[in-house]
Length: 221
Image (cartoon, rainbow, N blue to C red; front, top):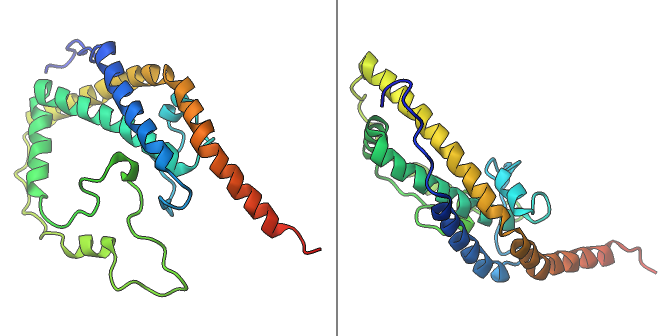
């Protein structure tokens, strides 16, 4: 790719819409199984969900528990990532070679999050300890202990290679933005059934929790 080249178009709207429909369908199949406490949250702010335009497009920003929102944003983000990966492999050879090489240099070790469904993507894998008693081991500790030895330094890139890589990184970012915009438009079309599912499966459980909490907070008669 040369500097000043025309921007590659994002995939067709129909292709993105079909993937979004499949992702929303999968999320709707999962949602009835969700219950408060069955999916542990995270102790840190979730950068994927906080202020996410995906949740705005879905019409549930700030209105549902984090696990419910995270399950949807993770599925949608995987669609974006896959489309960008496919585009990079087809159109951005320098970036694709760099990413492939980086993966090869850092393979190995135990990855507790590998292969998990999108509903668990990015969530903390280890529960909180009870009564301050530590666990014999945690998933995070196992992953840290099994890390491979640091790789040898990679051969440096030439100035021309660095320039081309920067251009392709910028192009990949623009492509991801375009895909993200198309996905948000497609996701907004599913807003009615997303909100209806939340009203049916999530809100009653939240109300029940609040009712139970209010009963415990009432002073004794």
